[in-house]
Image (cartoon, rainbow, N blue to C red; front, side):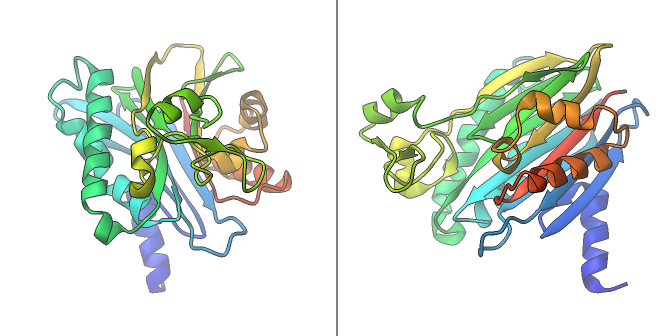
Amino acid sequence: MTGKEILHKMKEKVGLGSSDADSGKGKSKMSKNITHGFHLVKGKSHHAMEDYVVAQFKQHDDKELGLFAIFDGHLSHNVPDYLRSHLFDNILKEADFWTEPEKAVKRAYRVTDANILEEAVDLGKGGSTAVTAILIDCKKLVVANVGDSRAVICKNGAAKQLSVDHEPSVERGSIEQRGGFVSNFPGDVPRVDGQLAVARAFGDKSLKKHLSSEPDVSVEFIENDTEFVILASDGLWKVMSNQEAVDCIRQIKDARSAAKHLTEEALNRKSTDDISCVVVRFQ
């Protein structure tokens, strides 16, 4: 086995992915019916892969936690890699995570962004969007996001979006209040200060006065009609609606195969961006 193959096996075992084409899977020890899988594919850009994934179950005190995330970098692979290594640790350090998870997650996002800005000399320019999901004892799902990576849950075949796409055109008022502006030039996509196509992100020190890192947080309870959750970067959502994504994989029982199928369908629909996807199945 080559060194690259050994590294791939190690990352697959701990639920980490960040290579040109990478995948992995795992399952809950608390409930054998709950499984996860992920798949990443590099886009057609000339820069290195900038998507990073976390997908793993772990014991934390007397709780089982499923930790799932998509970190989609822009002008950076250092910032999403930093998030992969630190964000969940910072969330779980918050003493009130178990009682007030929304407040705890928001505080941890702010702390993590401050740490990234402090280390900007080492991490370099650019930043990252994020969508995170924490499954507590297979019953409660805490979802948070900044940017346009998205979480979608399927219940009885119906898609429901759990995250919020932070678009500059929607948040123009708050951006302008901070002294920034939204422009479609260059190109045809609204951008903060004509540069960034999302209104919230980690990092991006040069834009931070005009850019928020405040996450939207939602809590969802896993019930008998809950089938699966999809987390994916915008490389998928640019070419596929929430319901199309749900319909695309509803009959695929293996979570990793489902994640891979979604990325392949996005490629078939001519997505050129990096594509990363996590699927967590509950049935």
